[in-house]
Amino acid sequence: MFTANPLTGSKPEQYRQLLQQARALLHGESDRIANAANLSALVYSALPDLNWVGFYFFDGSELVVGPFQGLPACVRIPLDRGVCGAAARTRQTQRVDDVHAFPGHIACDGASRSELVVPLVDADGKLVGVFDLDSPLPARFDADDQAGLEALAASLLDT
Ligand code: SME
Image (cartoon, rainbow, N blue to C red; front, side, top):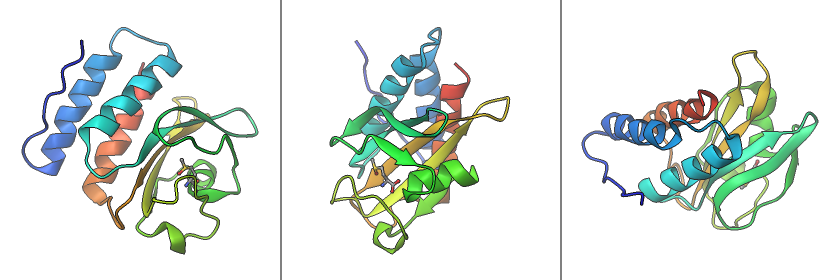
């Protein structure tokens, strides 16, 4: 049984603890779907004020929804659409304080107000997909969240 350990200390310290939990959870398993499912569940249950956490994987032409926590989401996202498409296309994390002000934002859950999307690029430089987090709060994600969630996203690629 998985026992959640409450995160303590400063935000960077909390992300260090969460990364350790993620590494322990993923250790010894190389199935990417299984690991993405567990990583989504871990992050969704550990961090406050989130309404969607999950993965889209690149199928060679567009992003296709993978394991996630939250309401059912749009299945396919072309790279020229939405915050997820922008992260995949530019290979740079997109931190959006107000999704309504982001041109082309795709509203899967009308409650979403801010969003962070981390691109997943493997060691060979190939686009794997994106790690997407939505919050019902405006400006939910700061630079500490971005750094912590980029490290968590990278832990999936290490498996
Ligand atoms: N809002 C995203 C779409 C995915 S959902 O948030 C789950 C976007 O604009 O790319």
